[in-house]
Length: 255
Image (cartoon, rainbow, N blue to C red; front, side, top):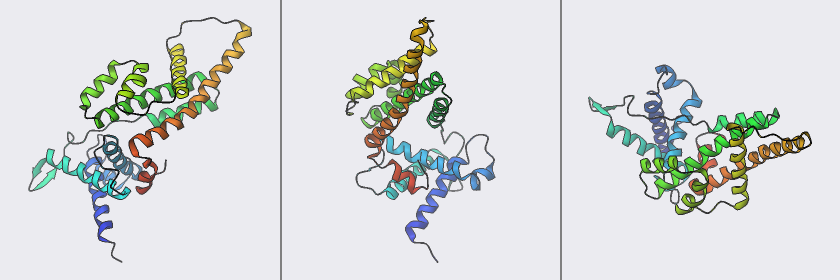
């Protein structure tokens, strides 16, 4: 039975996008890139859509989920074709036509959760704090670009500012709703405990204080677990209009 025209168009678009982008990734065998690892193919596709939405390059207000996906992938292909060499009337993408970045956020959360289960709370705080820095930087760059700030300027700004300055002055200057004070306190506490672990000052405590302090370390690690859920929800509302889950589902991806 013939597929609807829109379905055929979408399937072709997804195939072309995945083929052209993933086929140029370093250290990947050609056959695997074209027909193999499905999770890689979907990861490439989601990475494109994620960046187009984050940077406000696609209109979420007037488009359905499928239209958001189609629009993002078409723009990506058009931009890549325009920058690539043309051979016999066909665009030929090279290694320089596709830029990739490794997102460690999922791995950081996984490692943090494993550390909590193993009662290695200092390491859990270290992983959660690192994730928190990634999250704040990514949010500020996305909000900056949406506000018309060149990406290079946004990156330089993020690199030059302290964590507290990012969360207060820069965050609000970009028009984002201020983060609730209770979450701000939790974020600050996580970073302070992380700094105490990474930049150890050899602070001594009495034996009678030790148990209470260890309990506090555990509480901070577990509060970070709840904070991650809160911040991911905030990110979804601010950047994806609450549609991140449905967009991923449209591609067959789970959260």
